[in-house]
Image (cartoon, rainbow, N blue to C red; front, side, top):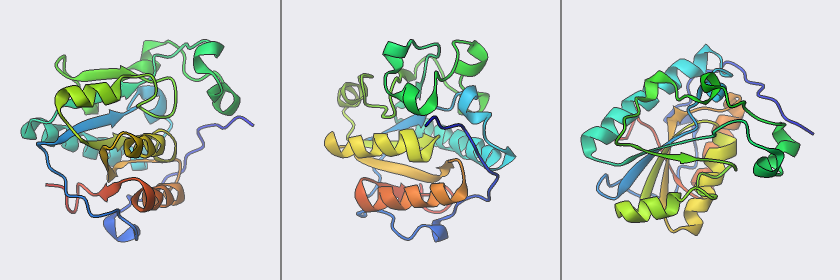
Length: 207
């Protein structure tokens, strides 16, 4: 069965919506890098105005905060136009994926990448799979990864699970992420908080 991007409009998820937020890790900007996950036009344009507007606003705010704190910024994305061999089993679930069209591939303006930032190219759900992300974080001397972007129950969840395997503390920003609908958003945040990461909110407790 092939899935499609069937998204619905929903109100922003807040700290009050999430019962399980993690083991109580404390974010330390001297130990952290920020991953802006898959904020490409192809994925973002599938979202309704809300949560898209709030997502982009909070991701932009988080990017500026990371720059102010001197944290490395890493942007993930797909290159588009992958062959069946490159895409592998993901084709069975999602079809051929995005084209190589630059209008699909480019990052949305709100995420504000610069030439100094790092970029990784994804072929699978997790931002760690065949991307060199673990080595990049090791080279930066970072053992905490802050994650924002889309989609929460797919790539961000897979990345958070892999953080456990890499002994990297993962901080998923609840109000700087989005999903197909509000239920998936909340359920995935709670799963991450219960199994593999710390759930943090830029609007409530991220400093």
